Image (tube, rainbow, N blue to C red; front, top):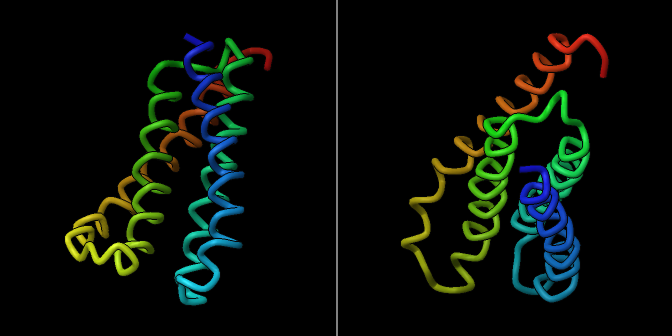
Amino acid sequence: MERKFLLWGLVFGGTAVVLGAFGAHALKEVLTESQQSSFETGVRYQMFHALLLLILSMQAKLRTRLLLNLIVVGVLLFSASIYLLNLKDYFNAEWLRFLGPVTPIGGLLLISAWLLAAVKTVQSKTT
């Protein structure tokens, strides 16, 4: 189980670097300042959770399939929806507006993952 989520963490980390560079350089002239800030938030949260996946993949006492899945799905919903919402004007894809409510759902999944990790830490005798 940990190998799959270790890979997710590595993929999320690597794509966060690529998307961060893409946002800072290629999208500098495309996105408004507000959109660029929002895009950067998606990248930052993706990287934070990539690191969390890497750490949890090595912590047998803390990791559960539920916890790791909350992080993966949360990142996909939260960060991906932010990226697409900020690029919808560039792609002339107004239909992407449906993603507006998806972002907070992803955020709730990420919050739930952190809370579950805290509960698992308290429950474990040693960390």
